[in-house]
Length: 158
Image 1 (cartoon, one colour):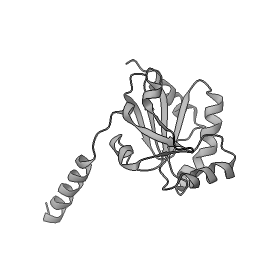
Image 2 (cartoon, helix red, strand yellow):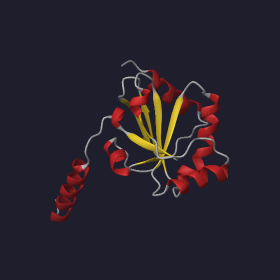
Image 3 (cartoon, one colour):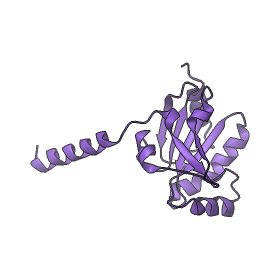
C-alpha cells in the first residue's frame, strides 16, 4: 500500500476518534429566545432529532415533506436543530417557506459526537435514549417504506 494512503488513513482515524462521544440524552440546543433545551426533556419518549442548515440544498428541499409527514404523524415528536451560525438564518428560511417547526440552534461539535457527519442527518432515538436509526442525506418523507422504517425504529424494544 502506498505511504500516502496509510498516512491518510491514520489522519482520518485520528479525526474520527478525536470527536467526543456524547450520549444522545446529553445533546442540547437553544431556541430563538436563547433558552437551552435537551433530549433529557424527552426521556422515556421516542423522538426524531433532525440536523439541518438553511444553506444546505437537500435540507431545504426536504423540509416541506418533513412538515407534511409530521402533520400526518402527530403522535411523533420531531426536533429539528439548525447548525447555522446564526439562528436568524434558520428563522428566515422557515418563515419564508411557511414551515411551522420552531427554529432551534445546535452545536456542530456536539452533533458530531452523535455521529452527524453530513447534513441533513436524521436520528431516531428510542425512549431509552439510544440512537435506533441514523440517516445521512435527505429522507424521502413521502416514501411509505422509509416512513414505516422510521416508525418501527422508534418503537423498537429497549
